[in-house]
Length: 441
Ligand code: PGA
Ligand code: ZN
Image (tube, rainbow, N blue to C red):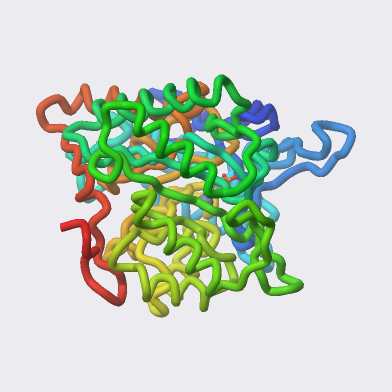
């Protein structure tokens, strides 16, 4: 038992230079902290990140109300509680949510998450173990390092300069024997792409953002970059996409608006499905996240029915790390994987509950950063702790991204001989309605 003695919070800056929350928590023996990330292409059902909306300061983006909530309501509620009682603390935080939508709208998910993670860090420090050895009470000795899904070309809301709608073009270095080799391959491809582009702007997640004429250009560029390295496309290197389709879905006309074959087109869900299907083989696509709008359940279900045995289909905005939406997705067969973002739900315990539900349904969990990040590396430990086998944490550039990759290098070193990299096997899942993926045996 170790009691929470004091909690403080501060307004700091994230990687976009926007305010975010840092929490500092003290027990008798330790001092821990946690910094909260922030999304840009957020799902409409996410827990609410509290912003001040005071246009005089940071254009309304300040988080002083969330800071205040940590230092008053939250501090009052959890002071004296045991840092080893993560569930108890998280339940207290959840109990402070009096918003009608139950989305932490008045307390702020940025306030609750900061405290929840600082508690976990304090407990690990007091136990004298690494964070990844503490986070999953059912597995104190995890050893699986994740395949990094590295976002090397940015579009959509994260990179307006690229002029394409699909948000993330990631490489998945899955055909390697260790995390560090896979990371090295990813870095070399990233550098090759930089050479090909002769320098280009970068998007919010550190991937390049060159001006392109159509979405397929991005895939061609990556294919070319991989081709100019020694790595084998389709054996060692695969592509993962996050179109973030809610961002280019036009509700009024019920169609998606994006550039295909060099032309801006308005397409139905079915046509979009066919477009994705046409890309899978030529570009060795292994995973598609948010291929459809967050309310286009029918589109998701059709796509998963047709392709769920072939590729990984991840719900991000669709599920928002929330058991309520995940349950529906499982029942209806809407996806075979879920993106896990702590701040979409606001506490560690709720995040774990969501991962449990996914795992039981045979779905893969992919731990993810946000486009607005800090130097906090908790997600690297979370990926190892739950042996999810996959992590999404941006380009291998900009410290807020590389800090997570570097933390995984440290964990690999700590584990030594015990470290396991499952590579392609990390993409093996039992799709809710189907069984194991066909082409990954
Ligand atoms: P976000 O983007 O952090 O801006 O929401 C990441 C994603 O869509 O996966
Ligand atoms: Zn996404």
